[in-house]
Length: 261
Picture 1 (spheres, rainbow, N blue to C red):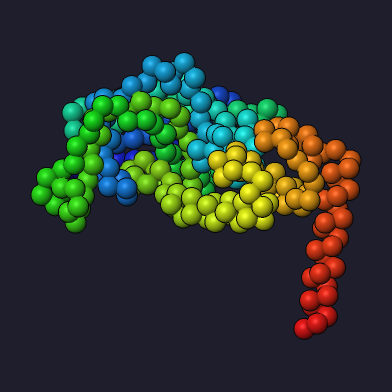
Picture 2 (picture 1 turned 180 degrees about the vertical axis):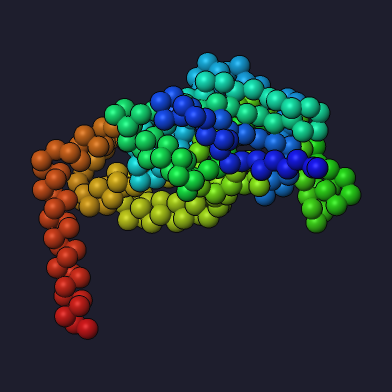
């Protein structure tokens, strides 16, 4: 009888999991993922990761457009990470230990969802090692089933995620192109509204909250360009009053427009 393995969901829950908070995961296999790539399971570089074996949630380690980095997005650590199996069926596996609720409420929630089954997928974050190659025939570059084979990978982190990329491992599929386009439109709007006071490269260093504060206080004479110093200026009482006045003026204009309609 053939034995089938379902990759990408958390492994069997150990009997002592409630106490140990440890769950095994299969992180990566040699199966083609939805991005049209195949990872080389025989050439994983793991030494650097083992020095800092973090587990993240949704690959959110550095914050985003609207948020600062949050240490609670690191939800656990890998007690073990290795490549197991035989040629053609090798896979990257890990034993994950999750932080407790007293330390990290987010880790507790993810942990409970893993036990319940509403979260079950994982995804590797890595950098390419060496130069890979495209397949041949239907897998050639530009062909119908274009497939890129990595020469090797260095593991940086891995995450518990909601949506998989590799059907066997689960790596979320995010439309980064759409996100970049939306961010560019927003930055261009801020650039125009601020009258070119900041270069585009400088605006890219600000969070969305910073840019909204700048727009509210765009009449304030700010010569500083460093994000930290700009935040300090906008936090001063005079700047807060100016931004509040600006918000009130905008509300009056909106009310006037509504009455006119």
